[in-house]
Length: 120
Image (cartoon, rainbow, N blue to C red; front, side):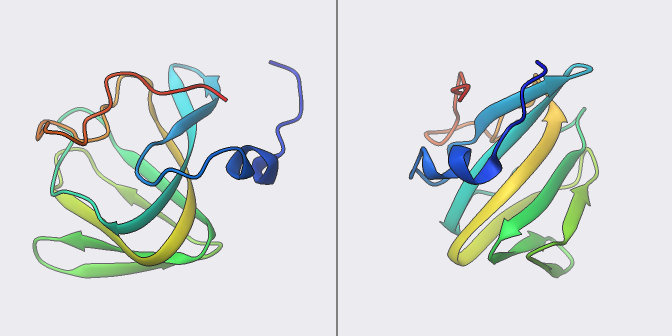
């Protein structure tokens, strides 16, 4: 892929919360965009670290021992195996870097699990 990707145009192309979209791939990693609002589910990823870069807004990442606020222009890396739960009072737009095999709900599963992500 040698085309420039306009993040705002990609973000404007969808409205759904908690449904990441693939916007690029490199070295077995997906570059994903997502919109969050409300609280997700507690989950972990045994084999994958997750990178969350806030493009717009802010959110809280709940951990069992603390809560971290991530603001626009900041990022957070959640290490593999660490249980976490993202929560956003207002809509937040994020970019995620994670291995292509990463399932959005980790080992927890359930109705919010996405079997396949859309590529936009």
